[in-house]
Image (cartoon, rainbow, N blue to C red):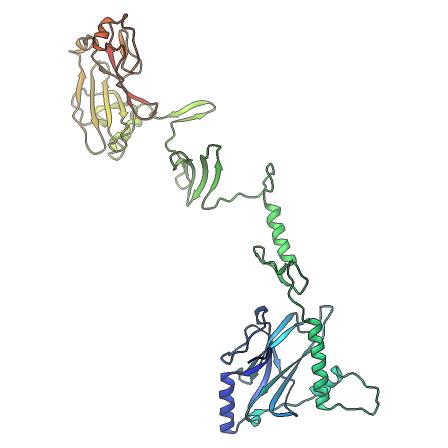
Length: 468
């Protein structure tokens, strides 16, 4: 079909007409609907059962045979001034049971309503061709008089008091054609004038629609609560998203404040290692703050917590009775009958020193126990699953021999300062002239580095050598 605007009978309409012809009972076409086609002129399709986007449906004002074509039925409907505010791109005829009998497209025509300055009455006409016009019940009422009064201009010849149907039809057609030419404007663009549709969205990327006052108010409300420029004061509530609030450093490291469930965390990202780790957590259910992988915590420039600081006293040593926490490093005051039940040597109290290893896979620690009121020192190696037997390194019987160890022989020492006459095995150089016997053991004039490390700076264990 080469026509631009036309009407077709639907498959449902054809079936109903055939049935009406065979039964001799005409169908009743009672309503006409108009639609905007979702902003586009439609292509009539016989399979349709409804319009693409119906905007109005009302009773037909007139349904009659075309005087010049006996197989053509014409339906007319007048849309009053009170209805409108939309484009007409499609039309349809319905029977008294809401079946779509015929559907057509329509030249783009804007129908204003009474609240707009250009409000007007609009007549819509549809024409359908059928094999048997008797299969359709026709309707003829006072609409013709209304149409003649509304659309036929007064003539100078006073003898012309009535209008023929053809004259009415021709006049209406001419009026509609002229009206369509006056209102068939294109849609507005960013480069050309035209009709424009309103839109209340504030996140749209369209450039062919205009914002409503509601959209402007939404944007104003959002902007009014936002921090606009550097230095502005934020007075509203700050809400963290799932990704948190990130603060970047100049070296590309970052600290992120995150919330999840009942927890609040400070998460540090190291750009060199591409690793993230929590530094401080708060659990609101348990009301607990937890520092993680933090070497030193200060309050008012005073260190209140360092790696390995777990206090003194039996309470501080209590984790050693928990087999799931055997690797806490530090110095503890303990009672052997309570926290070292497998210690068979000196019952009573003493000091337990725990030094961790650097190997992240073994989780072994070295335990040194010094009994109170005696120079006896015991040691062993253990983790949370296994432990070596205790070994007594210094006894009351061998303490003198221990302190007279040959020059240059390393021996363990539980302190960071060497006793008089001894040097720490920390890899430092020494004066070979001042210590000739020590130079026999180390002719290069350099002590061995026998320190054990937990991290890059935290010494966990050291040896000493006698220097002469």
